Length: 565
View 1 (spheres, one colour):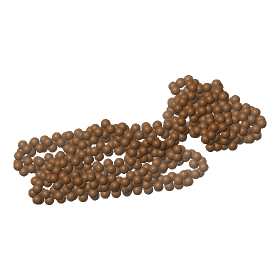
View 2: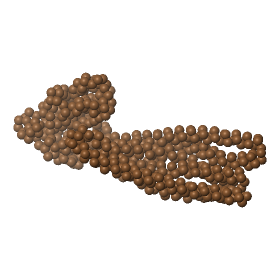
View 3: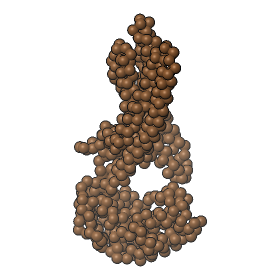
View 4: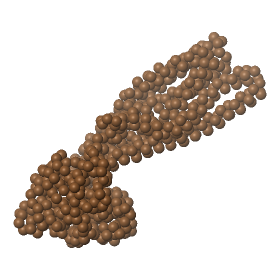
């Protein structure tokens, strides 16, 4: 873990610190509520001794009014405290979700490494909720401790032995409760890990459902999910057994402690050391103590689960970034001259490539891994292992990734659509430029898609655009990339699911729309390659050929086979 990176303890402290004012207010109200609750049996004892035993109606009325005031105060404090504490937990969880979202979406990446999207979703929901619950129950814990102290003071006024018994007995009980909660903490962490993994697998299966059906691989997918789900269920059952054992053990310890208080009080009453009213008050306080102890049991369990979830959140927040360094911003507007000098990364092998500003260049490769690694370098999602990628003579490693992406847009082949209208999807990165959106819809032939929808461009699309066909989704995604109107645009196979007639129309419109702006088409589509200024062929991760599309078709058999396959 990087130096200064968030830890589970730090995540918990930050969640509480951010809600400090609300926690303090709820704690004060809770302490008042618990104090009034503790005073009820004391007042009842006073009523017996000063009113019932003496037959004084005036004293009885006076103390009944005191009881009524106590109930009014404690009920008001309880309702107000409950509203504040619930809001505290929700606000703390919300802030954690925002922090996690910012880390996952950070331009330098890294949080998604080795984590399924469903697992990240589980951390941002379930784990954030559990950590938020810590901020909620903290005031409960303070209130419960206050109730124990107030009860001990009241018992001291009744009888020193009874008061000392409570004061000396509470610390060992709390320490034992902490020890008993440790297995619950470990098993809760495992439970959340397994549940997050199961969510990730389920999300992957749903996303690839059509592919799985087409391959006839449903049974294998179901078997995989069944195994993952069973592991998650087993972890959840172990955590549930641990929580039940934890609560049972604490309840047993509390019951024994309260029984001892009652027995000592009864002995003192028989001995004449305390009055009948004092005995009633002592027994009432002993019964009342069950509430604070149960509340502490609940708080202890929530803290154990919150600590486990905080560690999982800290792991995401402390994830090392994928690309280090770089604080400069490219010139505005960027000219758009791209250059790769001896670039090696994954399948790329010492690529030297010059893409002049304003050029329309095709890149052809038969190896998907080569295309993927090239896109990673151009988007600065990863830095080259060797060599440099430059924009207008400045190495990308010296540029801030967020600022870079305002000049260079890499549109991946598998880009998803949002669950919003077609128009909102297209103008997501258009900076409010209505003309750019209209031109992009026309150039990508997405305007034809809009005309076929019931509400036109205002039609709400399903999640990931599944209400559209594959070709329609590609056209809307292409329109979104074009509407961004970046100085440099890199498109990866933008028309693989589009019919040939529409593809040719898109190719000619694309060239016209991107005139005088740098555009790179990583594709094997002959219609798109035909409108490029030149085509670069990457073979075995290195540049093998470079020239106009027509010349390469005529002279290069390997190129011809790749493009016309």
